[in-house]
Image (cartoon, rainbow, N blue to C red; front, side, top):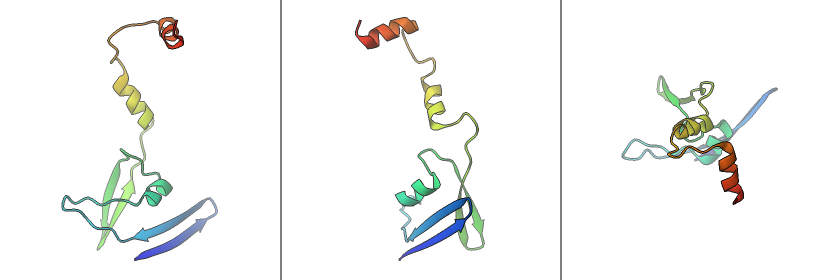
Length: 97
């Protein structure tokens, strides 16, 4: 079954496309790409599950300041260089000098 619902508010417009999905033997469900993109569910997005009667709701947890994917990647790289080069030495290497 596929159903489309459009919600409109003066500052927000969301189109929901509902598809029936199947839970795997490991308890996993694929969130359709159009819904992930529309709602900003990127890889490593933290979520919370809320139960309301017979309904299970997936809620995106807002990222804390400074914990973007880029900042996390930068944090993993910080201090991982094995050779200390000055900025000028690095630029010379990138220029092929």
